Image (cartoon, rainbow, N blue to C red; front, side):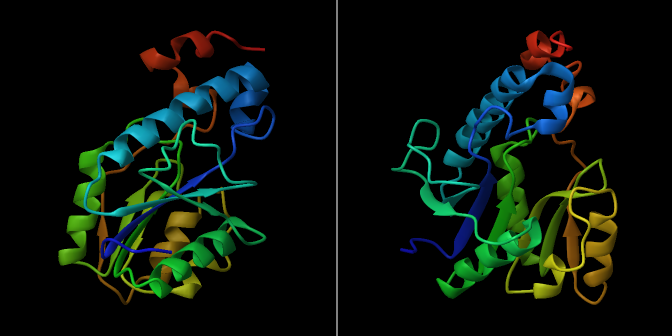
Amino acid sequence: MLRTSSRALLIFTRNPVPGKCKTRLAATIGDQAALEVYLILLRHTAAITAKLNDADKLVYFSEHLGNGTIWDPETFRYKLQEGTDLGQRMQNAFEDAFEAGYSEVLIIGSDMYNLNTSDLKEAFNRFMEAEVVLGPAQDGGYYLLGLKGPIPKLFRNKAWGTHTVLKDTLEDLKDLKVSQLSVRNDIDQYEDIAGIPVFETFAKKIK
């Protein structure tokens, strides 16, 4: 992994395949509509992260490397997630980054429509005052995690995808200085797209 900065942004994403992305949302609006919603989220994530100039940007795909349609290979480096669950996949990605020499590493998903470039810049800036940066999600998880070095216990013994993840993570971090960003909501189910203009068409496609 060629490094051009001391900072790395790791972007976890699912390959956009009907029936394999946004499954909870698909249960309400159908596989194809859920895929179209996810494509909007992917394009939004690619747009806001491409503007982050002072960090290397690595996209971690769930199943196979992308084809460059959404993630410009001139801007993003392609990687494959490795591990049996989300925790192991994130831990492996962080360890790869630290082994490559990065000293400040953020990880985000690709389903945050209300996340923007300034939020990512702010997250990196928080490293000046904290060892760990967290972006709490409304559902009890987190949408962003930033580390300055490996903390393996953060990725173990968690019920990923449940409301206990943030609480359990903060318990692991009780002896470290943590900086928390604003609480945000990710797009996982029907209620998350209702009322957002860009998703209005899809919100009407209830099965």
